[in-house]
Amino acid sequence: MGHRTSLVSLALVASVIGALSGVGLSRASGVTACDHTRGSFGASTALSFGLGLPAVVGVGALVDVAADQRRLVDTSFAGPGVIRHLSAEPGSGTAFVLDRRGADQVVIVTPARTIRLEQPGEATHPSWSTDGRLVWSLGSRLRVWSADAPSFDIAAPTGTLGLFSPVFVDPEAIVVVAEADPGLTRTEDEGVDDLWRFDVTDRRWNRLTGFHARGDRWVAIRTPILRADGSLEFVRIDGLSSRTGLPSFSLWRLATDGAVNEVRGLPREMYLAGILGGKRVWNIYDQASGEWRLYAEASATTLVDLGCGAVMVDPRSVDDPDRTPALERRSSVPTVTPTPTVTPTPTETATPTVSPTPTSSPTPTSSPTPAPDDGYLSGILVGDFATFEAATEAAVKIHAAFGEAAVVEVVDSATAPNIVRPGVWAAVMLVPDGTDPLAALADLRSRLPEYQDWSWVVSA
Image 1: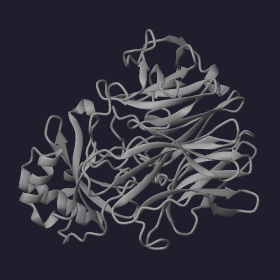
Image 2: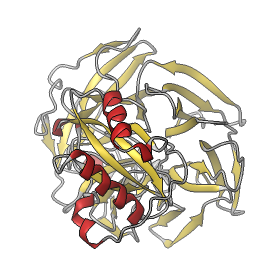
Image 3: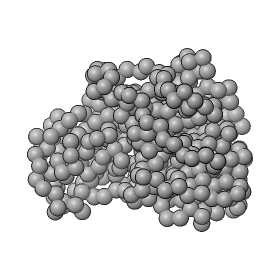
């Protein structure tokens, strides 16, 4: 998938569900369960006109979320695949990615018709302009679509690996998350995201932020959203590759005058979903149900539950259509001596997602592992490798060391942009829920000492 915003490269998945420290969670009546059929059913009128806040539950149960209600939306028009990364613009319509095995579709629902745009590969994070244009990430470039003009692509700025989570800040300017390429820019910064602005008229890029991530420190940017005053808010994530613990999350703002400031720290993993009634809406993962929930910000210390739904993050309760277990291709892979490259850093190519995503992904972002309800919450990543064959060789060695019962996958930035940077591969062994991931990491390093310096705990 493309850049997946839902996950970052966490050294260890701690419990991120439960009451927020210092923040009250108010459960909305009637929407406490992740029931894909709960709520009144409505036609796709709101979707067509870009009203409300569209969200997806599971594979493709779409809901239109308003401040005081939820309505199911008829999704028979969508077709096979996993719906993700929704974006709505009043008067223009709703767009989303239909993630399929192989090339994705960008689906645009307007008052007049439903448009399906075949993509050359992974697509992530469509976003509307106020004049009805749409932009999304294809990984190393953006694509801009208009109903009355030919589509065109925008190449990533020099010194970046990928683009994800683009946002029109005005009809002639796009701000996007880009991952720095340490080989072309700051050699000290291995894993760092920055915001870049592309001016459509003069076709120029300008970097808006200057974050740093020296040594094993990394900095990720997720879910940028445009506020009514023209400012851009986003979630920043800071972590250490060498530390097995949750990174820190914070809310930041890029003002119209170019000033970049932290708004406040966040008590847990949470991502912006949009704005309802002038209030922020957050995506917060519910580990008990294996679904994302939406919370409206009644105040800085009180969040009101709007029910299950994912907006700019990837559903974790469904499989990535592009996931292919390593053993499916093991017999045809020649033996190659593994060649490590760099320590994995959180990216979204496109993911993004993020992917990055946007890479991404981002998007940045699907998980390389089964969702929590499949019994896996973390994994041991072994990498990075320069080729798919080398990563598959590592997967074969892991199976030989742990037996055929071990669940191992070979992933790259297209299938796991949240934990693998573009251009490299990795093998991931899933750790069953209830197993201490640190003990599992120590066990793998003991059995396979050649991977002592290239193995890490990551989130599932």
